[in-house]
Image: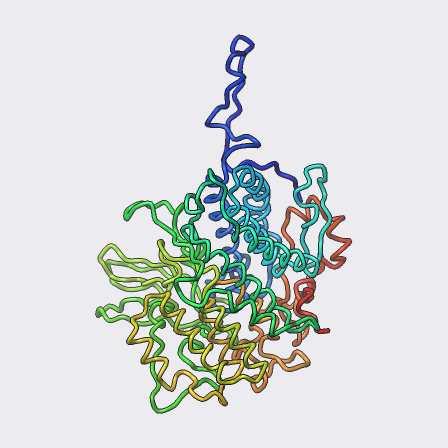
Length: 546
């Protein structure tokens, strides 16, 4: 990895002549130094850069998990991701946003905070460090950790995800200790720099425990998997919408065309993005074994999660989902254009409504967009809903079916509350036959499919799919009878060079080009097959059963 010296903001270096020696004793307030900015000045940028990388990883994962589709383009990155093909270009941004924009700024913030007795900032920095390295370990399987910020080492060694996980748990424990300390007398309040939880220290502590529960839940294939440790972490993790860590994006104005402050999922999903049939089927309970009965009800989230467009007669219709198991993906869907003069679209693939919100000059709604990708949407980084689905999974594994059902329902409820669904609609849906009502009927598939919906656009979607082995049997073959993610099949346009066998599934992302170009010797030591197409189907550490 190329080493980049840190400065949180771009600075100019003043060159002073010898006749201006008297200025040498003063600090330039417009230039960054080793001592400045202070912790509260550093934190907002760190949190913004972290969210950028994390949510961008989520957008990429959502194409791999077939939540999202893309219009046909033989060399288009997002179209290739739906083929399960990630190249170095697709892999670059989460890596760069973490290492270049975020990780190298954490230790300077910790040191600045320690000078001021700002222990809460130290705790937050350790949470972000644990979180960033943890999700990149999930994504890539190997990455530099021990030597990543040693400026004397230009080619740092790589560490395996197993080692990184050990460090992640240590950092989270250390963060909790720091957050529980009393701040120094002159320390800045956490609220001065906290754009996630607005200075709510309790929420940061809950976030640390929530991340512990999340990373522990990833280990279900390993002998170290400990359901009771997960439940212990969940006791102190977020349990409500209000306790969730959510990043609220803010547009510059109602009229600006700039996207610099827009929601990441607005920026990352373009007019080429579509929703999939799988995603719609999950929301509509249209999958094998889905709950159903005499009192079925449409999920109130449907109109917010699936884009709609306006017909010529003014009525609204939902997008059709792209079916990855069909031949459509071999050459389409194709992009479409709208002609306001004729009030028509130029081809039939307009049935696949674009994800990004759009309105024609004549007022016709071309797309309502979705709740997640409006310009001022929220980034759901870790929520009480996710925690409840983790609990439901663990309770099922422990045969505590009543508790599992309660957690499953609570997960749906919290996600709907975050989305702003009216309480009476939530109550009606949870009482309907579209939700499992009998503890004995609840399956892991029910839980994980609802979690898939609640974790829309999250890299955790792909983590869950991998550790649950998609919808396969013990031999890796697609099996709807025993598989968890019903209907998730190998796509018709699958990238066969990377997935030559029917039992091959996406297991890791390609390595970023920076490492291929500047640190390939170190990469080869830990990942000898990194340059083979089939490297993408090699399981990472926690994805191997022992």
